[in-house]
Image 1 (cartoon, rainbow, N blue to C red):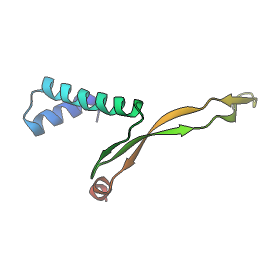
Image 2: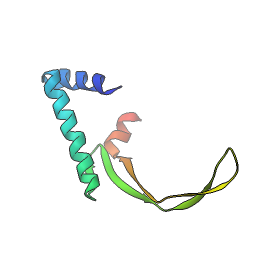
Image 3: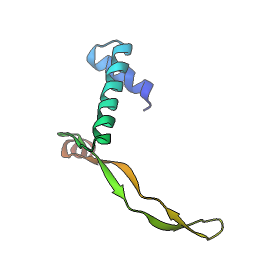
Image 4: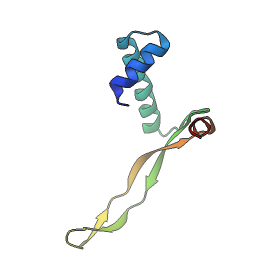
Length: 90
Protein backbone atom coordinates (compact mmCIF):
# COMPACT_ATOMS: atom_id res chain seq x y z
CA UNK A 1 0.00 0.00 0.00
CA UNK A 2 1.41 3.39 -0.94
CA UNK A 3 0.47 6.77 0.51
CA UNK A 4 -2.27 7.49 -2.05
CA UNK A 5 -3.92 4.14 -1.27
CA UNK A 6 -3.61 4.85 2.47
CA UNK A 7 -5.24 8.26 2.02
CA UNK A 8 -8.13 6.66 0.13
CA UNK A 9 -8.57 3.94 2.77
CA UNK A 10 -8.51 6.46 5.65
CA UNK A 11 -10.95 8.76 3.83
CA UNK A 12 -13.35 5.87 3.22
CA UNK A 13 -13.11 4.51 6.76
CA UNK A 14 -13.48 7.87 8.49
CA UNK A 15 -15.84 9.72 6.18
CA UNK A 16 -13.29 12.48 5.60
CA UNK A 17 -12.52 13.93 2.21
CA UNK A 18 -9.32 12.73 0.58
CA UNK A 19 -7.76 16.18 1.11
CA UNK A 20 -8.59 16.12 4.83
CA UNK A 21 -7.34 12.53 5.18
CA UNK A 22 -4.09 13.50 3.43
CA UNK A 23 -3.63 16.44 5.83
CA UNK A 24 -4.35 14.19 8.82
CA UNK A 25 -1.83 11.55 7.71
CA UNK A 26 0.80 14.23 7.03
CA UNK A 27 0.17 15.73 10.47
CA UNK A 28 0.59 12.36 12.20
CA UNK A 29 3.80 11.58 10.32
CA UNK A 30 5.22 15.07 10.95
CA UNK A 31 4.39 14.82 14.65
CA UNK A 32 6.07 11.41 14.98
CA UNK A 33 9.14 12.72 13.12
CA UNK A 34 9.35 15.82 15.32
CA UNK A 35 9.05 13.74 18.49
CA UNK A 36 11.82 11.39 17.37
CA UNK A 37 14.04 14.35 16.41
CA UNK A 38 13.45 15.77 19.88
CA UNK A 39 14.63 12.56 21.52
CA UNK A 40 11.20 11.30 22.55
CA UNK A 41 9.70 7.89 21.88
CA UNK A 42 6.20 7.55 20.44
CA UNK A 43 4.10 4.74 21.91
CA UNK A 44 0.79 3.81 20.34
CA UNK A 45 -0.78 1.26 22.67
CA UNK A 46 -1.84 -1.85 20.80
CA UNK A 47 0.00 -0.81 17.63
CA UNK A 48 3.67 -0.28 18.45
CA UNK A 49 6.46 2.06 19.45
CA UNK A 50 8.71 4.34 17.44
CA UNK A 51 12.13 5.17 18.85
CA UNK A 52 15.61 6.24 17.79
CA UNK A 53 18.49 3.80 18.03
CA UNK A 54 22.13 4.88 18.10
CA UNK A 55 24.47 2.91 15.86
CA UNK A 56 28.12 3.25 16.87
CA UNK A 57 30.92 3.92 14.41
CA UNK A 58 32.44 0.77 12.99
CA UNK A 59 34.73 -0.59 10.33
CA UNK A 60 33.36 -2.19 7.19
CA UNK A 61 34.67 -3.45 3.90
CA UNK A 62 34.17 -2.19 0.37
CA UNK A 63 32.80 -5.34 -1.33
CA UNK A 64 34.30 -4.37 -4.67
CA UNK A 65 37.89 -3.75 -3.53
CA UNK A 66 38.01 -5.43 -0.11
CA UNK A 67 39.40 -2.18 1.31
CA UNK A 68 38.59 -1.41 4.95
CA UNK A 69 36.46 1.70 5.38
CA UNK A 70 35.17 3.58 8.39
CA UNK A 71 31.41 3.80 8.79
CA UNK A 72 30.33 6.82 10.84
CA UNK A 73 28.05 6.64 13.86
CA UNK A 74 24.39 7.25 13.01
CA UNK A 75 20.94 7.48 14.48
CA UNK A 76 18.32 5.19 12.96
CA UNK A 77 14.54 5.08 13.42
CA UNK A 78 13.24 1.89 14.99
CA UNK A 79 9.72 0.45 15.14
CA UNK A 80 8.67 -2.28 17.54
CA UNK A 81 5.28 -3.86 16.90
CA UNK A 82 2.85 -3.97 19.80
CA UNK A 83 0.82 -6.93 21.02
CA UNK A 84 -2.36 -5.83 19.24
CA UNK A 85 -0.61 -5.62 15.88
CA UNK A 86 1.17 -8.93 16.39
CA UNK A 87 -2.09 -10.64 17.36
CA UNK A 88 -3.89 -9.20 14.32
CA UNK A 89 -1.29 -10.77 12.03
CA UNK A 90 -1.31 -14.18 13.70
